[in-house]
Amino acid sequence: METKIAYRIAYSQSKTNLKGGKWANVATTKSYIVNMADDGATQEPFEIASEYKYENGREWSVQFAGWDSDSEIRFYRAWTEQEHAQKEEEKKSFIFDNDKKILHTWKYNLDTGEAADITEIEKVSDYCTGFYRSGDKYIFSAMIGQNQVPYVCELDYTNKRPLFDKTLAYTYMPTVSEDGITIRQTDYKVYIEYPDGTTKYLDTKQNFNFAPVRSPDGKYLTFIAGQTNETADGVYVADISGDNLTKITTRGGYIGAILTLDVPDHHKGSSDVPVWSPCKNQHLIYFTKKDNENGANIYQIDMDTGIESKITDTGDGTLNYHPTPSPDGKWLSFGSNRSGTRQLYVMRADGGELKQISKAPEFHGAMHVNWHLMAGQ
Image (cartoon, rainbow, N blue to C red):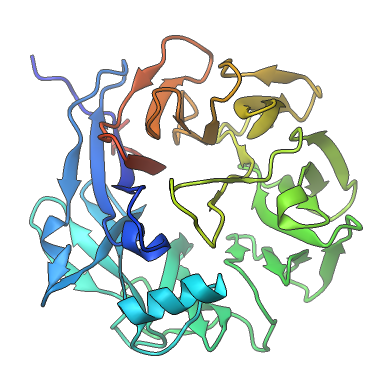
């Protein structure tokens, strides 16, 4: 009897040891999907959109970007001119010059192979990322000059226009809920905007406030804060009214990013931030905590009781990172270098056997899990 697929787990994989800086490794990025049954049985990873990896002698990065349905996905297709990449390495920062650094978001049908460049549909920028659905619209981020500017468009990717009617400096991917409440991070400060036009600033007395996320039941939001991005140790929670702002735990000095390369990286890794369990009858937050000199483990904290629990328990020098629950809350995935290579693992959220799902070879890394619960589950 054929095993029924309950979940599809997407991730991206690239080389990690190539000389030449960040882009030399990022350019090798490919994307994969693992099919998983309800009992945790998995199939072999298979590569997606491989036909978009090379074009006219260019090697493009192909990174998974989101699910629209069981067979319809989005992926990022990026390219950087080598001379431009070298300039970024020298300046140790990202530089957004027209035609020299491109990141387009595509839609893709896994069954038919049909694809469309949705960035090119009424294009506003050569660098458009983060499309996510909010009601009957998509929200996404477009680089305009040196700023990320939130945009909105229709479900067919037309009528692209700025989300806000005024410039809000560097605003990174706000979340717009169907009740009209917007949570945004502008210049590393967190704000809540309400349908009546009022705005609440969440003042932690810290310079760096990052990655606000609303709880599944809409009652709360969580984010991290510290004086700098490398000392953003505090995990904060507030009511959606903006009241009762509280630091509920710390991350033990964890810098909040996991290095994705084995060579120098001016970006200093990939952000690793707290996430909510999707179960609306719980207020569980998963996060990474530095609990030994050279490593980190995955923890959860119950916001209602204050009880903090350790999910992984590896020795000194092992990094566990990027906790990501399945959409139904039954499973938890995370990355770990316990084998010497950055691989991805899943386990039941209530404990149990750990299973490796990625097959990254030596000097590669598998990162950024993106779960999908199949229709009818």
